[in-house]
Image 1 (tube, rainbow, N blue to C red):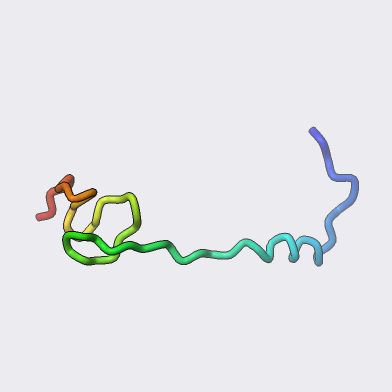
Image 2 (cartoon, helix red, strand yellow):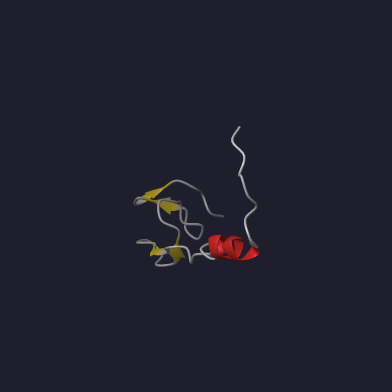
Length: 58
């Protein structure tokens, strides 16, 4: 495999890693219970997904 010819400097490494940021997850409102949930996932509060009950919440 190819190997780098020279070692990266600390400054270059820090510049490269400067874009590794945590992002706030996009939350959407559940149409059934109006709680915030992750998109394209079952609502953990009421168990609905796309206006259908898919998980029984006891």
